[in-house]
Image 1 (cartoon, rainbow, N blue to C red):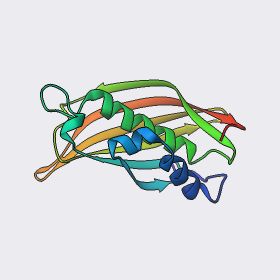
Image 2: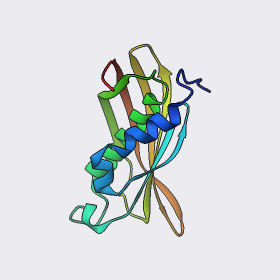
Image 3: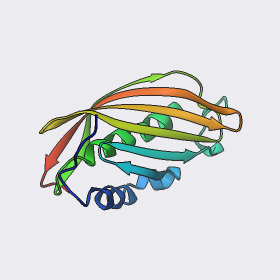
Image 4: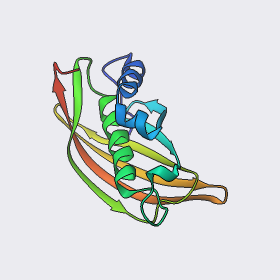
Length: 146
């Protein structure tokens, strides 16, 4: 379902906000695509972000997905709003091993206050890609908190 953003400058606003998110800087994540109601974040694999078996840590995967869904919701919010996660549900489908995590967040329904989103996490490697996570989330838009 195509969405029309209320802010014609939503791409700049999303990118500027992402640049201020220190956890994304710490992880080395990059915002690679911003469209109305859809965002993609890429995280190159790093050994220092793994768990004891050498897989990308589940907490890292969840954090990147949460941000992708949050920014998908934020892309449809008016200027002057902030976005926060209200509820998230994650299914970890496979160990996160590969060259990079690609997290795609999409808005399913944008309400006046609450926005419901769906996200997918994929690990890409030379021989293809594998879906490693599925997330649903509810985001809240808070006015006057940008």
